Length: 415
Ligand code: AN7
Image (cartoon, rainbow, N blue to C red; front, side, top):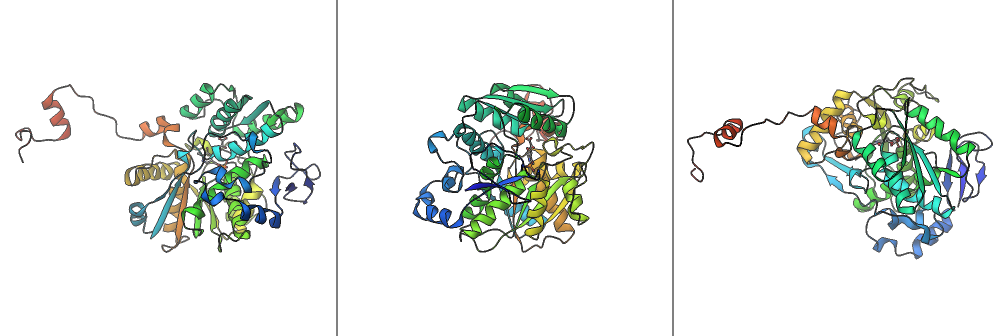
């Protein structure tokens, strides 16, 4: 087990604190000796453990298990959505609802592993930049681990639920006059100038390891089969890369036979990766002033773009953009048809599915899993704004019957 550069293949010790390749500056990933991993997994009783991130501890880069920091993450529902599938003309649709994690987003999968590794490495200070969910998650795990936590968030553009989480868990919250990309740039520099502050953005390869458990869970929930396609909202692009890593490792270990097509969805106002895929380009063109109502994915310069582009191309998948209107429509639809309330960024996977079905890119016979990444209560303001306002009436029978359109001549119990 070691860390390896995705570009030049330079290797680093698993316990070295390094965020980018020292030779070429590219991203790192954790690599396992397949034979060793296979033997470890074979000897283990992991399949008897309930669905959760730590069910897969043998697949994770934590050596000292006494250092694990957990709030019971993973084990989220894979909801069979017959009704929505039928409305959209799709035969088999599931929603993997990551809002069911302890702080309400998929970030907890990565943070439990990232903070456990930080604990193993003896870190006392942790930091991240965030559009909201990463900061909420890191703040919670840092609290549990007894670490000092600093989060940088874009001023004024984060959903209230997420801000409240970072604050109540006791993080030092800095609102940066700028966007997420500028905030990330600052934390990269801070962790370089102050090496005792451990960086937990998704360039941290240990976070990606935790997030790959989402793929393992989907396969196990589908009786050891991968779906044909997985649709994922994309912002900084760590998650789609992590999920793909999970599927490829599961296949190499022989748990699944086929790999799914990875399909990334971005908001139209901040879609550099979708643009690169559509134009068949080897590079992304960062978006200067990203805009979307889905503030979680309002990211113009995604740090893990290369991993994501590789995942999409290697899997034979695709990427698509969706407008704010399409996102909000999909959010409402998922809530009203399936009883699943997700935040706008998460609904982009459903909006993307709708668009790709219409365009004939996704076939009605495909077995599709849409990942919904964060809980709807993260951003109650948007939900309230787009729904019909509650009617205010007097505590009086006639007024209520009128409001509900009930006939007043029918007495209670009579039919
Ligand atoms: C609900 O919290 O980047 O493509 O700083 O909160 O892995 O970045 C959040 C991202 C999708 C995109 N859905 O995932 C942050 C942050 C939700 C999110 C994404 C985010 P990546």
